[in-house]
Image (cartoon, rainbow, N blue to C red; front, side, top):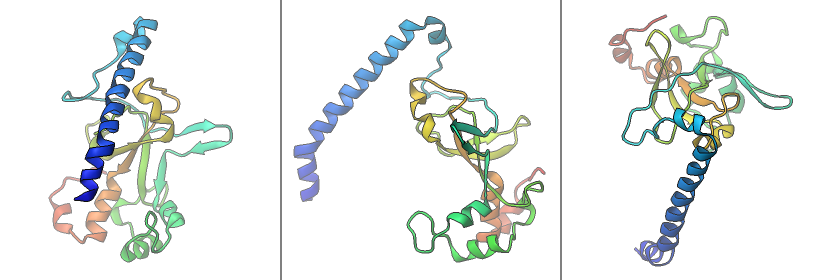
Length: 196
């Protein structure tokens, strides 16, 4: 296509130069960090490219700035507060809105919050490509799936900040609710061993 020819002829070489330069500068920067703090350098872990990364953390809220607090969970109530019919980011299927408004969460409702927990944040350190990675509790039970990092975690490739870096996870109860209540796939739910 014309677009592809134009991109390959004009822009691809610039992009390739940028990537090469960025990789080289990143390597030099990391080398400098490691030379400045040799104790910290010995504690650095692999980048998880073709290696397994196991990260340990806790579910925890955080305060990135004065008077700003992010709770450790998000709920169906919050989803409905953001809901905008027809909006690219915040639209919802009609049956999801109906079930959430009726608080029809079944066995997936959080008993303390009396709501459906949709997501939670942890102190785990993740990297690109971790989306969908299992998040397990201390008993080895699946409690969610990692899918993103918070804004303050953008610097994690250079330095991990335990007070600010958070991994954003979808709560497995929400996933199961979607399968069961939205999808009507009780046959899938019956095949699972659910821990309460």
